[in-house]
Length: 106
Image 1 (tube, rainbow, N blue to C red):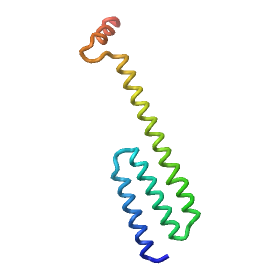
Image 2 (image 1 turned 180 degrees about the horizontal axis):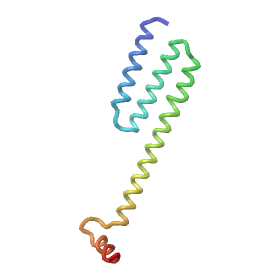
Image 3 (image 1 turned 30 degrees about the vertical axis):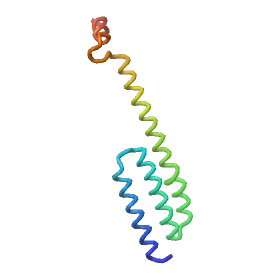
Image 4 (image 1 turned 90 degrees about the vertical axis):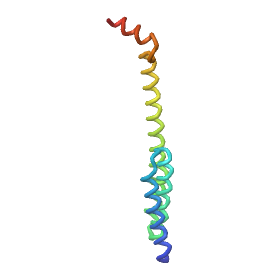
């Protein structure tokens, strides 16, 4: 392959990696991580390593972003459940339910 195409792919890969690092939202970061994996796979194809490119597509473009999205969703569910549990046990500020529970304990 010509050198300018390889140089362009390397620059695009570096730019995509920078976007991954600068993205703060984990769900968006998973999507950008998938694009980064695709750029790496294209670079591997340009370097005549199709076996490595296929592995990168399977793992870096599909599996890792999927795992990240599933982990983020599970963490958000756990946080919501924890907040709901705390709200149910302890009365809201200004609510007499929390005061009644304290009086029953003493």
